[in-house]
Length: 138
Image (tube, rainbow, N blue to C red; front, side, top):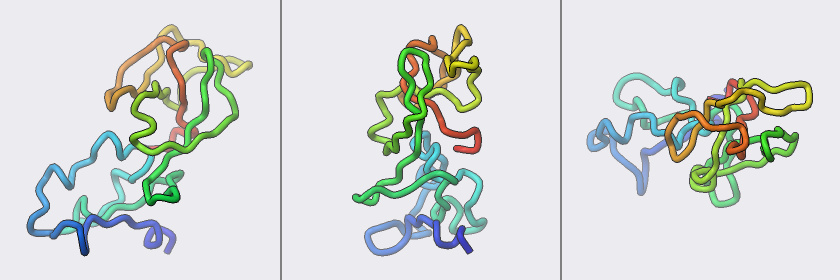
């Protein structure tokens, strides 16, 4: 029942129609990461047009989808959580939740797998500004 209440649709007034929606609209986009579940979508004519929110996603006061991140300062992963929209996160270097840390919550790998400018790459720990809150945050 919760899944049905967390649905997001591109159909309806001001939206798309099933017949006119092309592949590029239905496909997964990098800005969906942490906001829209890439797996939970119906089969058939509605595929990619009706989606479910990701596990930790929420909507802000303007209706934009936001995803939570832990703040990272000088390779130190803090307990501070910020929710950002896709536009707000564009300038950040975001490490995966599975990045290796020591007991003091410092990123210890020489290079860390990150998302930056909608691309997957590797960066030095000092360049990381945010970190996913959970490995389930897909």
